[in-house]
Length: 163
Image 1 (tube, helix red, strand yellow):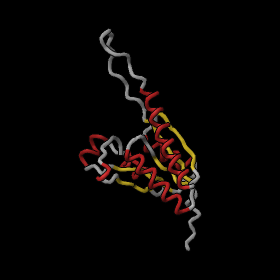
Image 2 (cartoon, rainbow, N blue to C red):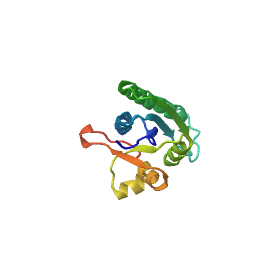
Image 3 (cartoon, helix red, strand yellow):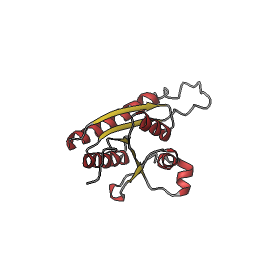
Image 4 (cartoon, rainbow, N blue to C red):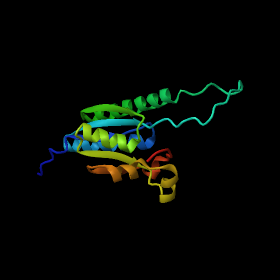
């Protein structure tokens, strides 16, 4: 059997979407097979600036996007921890805030000496990736370690943001 020791820790990007769950499941499955630990990473991108302010009493109060993003990140990490626990796979969690998601994942993989990054992809075409952006495409360009891309299967019936 080949020596798989270099794969001690896998960084797995998760979010609160069906794709995030599918990516967590694949990351746990791979880590379990390799006898590795998982570092689940929920990255919260920078909040886009609000252009102009309206001082009108008919508008609802502003939404606390930071609190919503943190709540979604914690929900995703709780789901991922349950998956790892069910598989008997050790895991840690990490939340990064205010950085491009791909850059944050690459930085975390370096900082925590992860052997591989696991990321999800909706499998969008070129035009959609240009318009919507793609964490997966950016990450595969900048990562200095292997990146495993997990696609969301069509039978999940999900559509969502991100990769």
